[in-house]
Image (tube, helix red, strand yellow):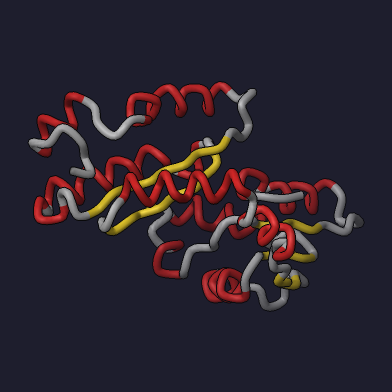
Length: 197
């Protein structure tokens, strides 16, 4: 099984079927022990109990596996930690990057951005990606540091994911007004017609 929303399943399965071989893979970064301790004790213990029910726990990076090991008492559980990096097809990406449509879009972006610093974000449209929080953080940057107005632009691109979930639809509805460079309320807060100007 895989991902954070099934973190308790290995422990539950282990109780029901101790004969099973169980593996769990976590696609998201694992918190350091300092952050893990911020969880209420009972929640943290249940989370670790669930994960340690697996024979093998997989992570994308060594740092994430080490963070798990530092925050959990793995010794004596029989749980192995494994690292399975997710690679990309470099040749395919290169081929995509040199298509005429990409060159045209890049020229448009360069013309729009000019000599301003650029913050680029590409995410799936789902709750765990906190797209709205990123947009609010950008607004906060321009509010708290007006000297950056006109000197930085935020390019956010979100591609569809899990469109059939009601929670995803609600999230998209919340950030839909942010799709353009400015909203009336942001212009009032920053004193500018556009967040980037």
